[in-house]
Image (tube, rainbow, N blue to C red; front, side):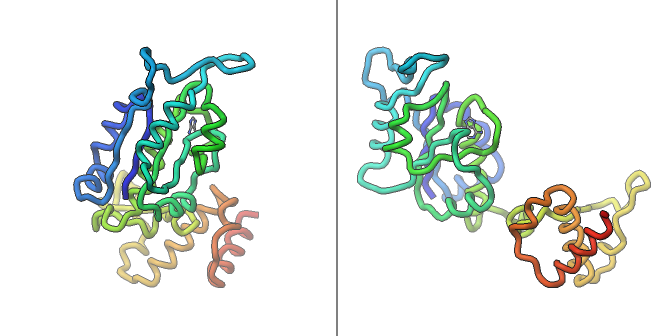
Length: 243
Ligand code: ADE
């Protein structure tokens, strides 16, 4: 995978991309991440990237020329998705992450200031992405979130001790509770079933816990998951208990 990131603050990416799973994926050649300073694509003496909004109002708007120049320079003759990080975008979730993890190459544009000239949205960008219903100071942190969610899906990105399989949201429900040693901590014991060695019982305990947690914390997710007949019985049972 090849990810190009256009930003006014390239240094923001140094820490997050220099650690842990993303760093290892880069070192192992699974992903190539290139950061471009939008200011390098200005052709005026003062390297102006933003200007006052036509029609008045507060804040500054990112000018179209540097963004078009940067995207065109990066793309060359190739076609690839051009994503704009903005609170007005499509809400990013695991499904959107999985959709985008299929692309071999993409461009992420980090918006800043009050906004981006509308012609960028209309004629340059292929998709707008929001990571949640809150306003960040810019698209950089959002781009890092998107990159992390994509990179960890690449085959080989996770070590054997990490797993993508049971993650909350990959299967549509929240993850079951996990325990490690010690068996007893301050008088709080690990549930017996996890020490039973009975894999069937452990799996059904985990499924039940996962469903309980989802019903309690994120009932909105349940409508979107595929439930087995056994799950449906469990859900009915849990819901009766709650009443
Ligand atoms: N830029 C500012 N806020 C954002 C958000 N919530 N998601 C994506 N980009 C943003």
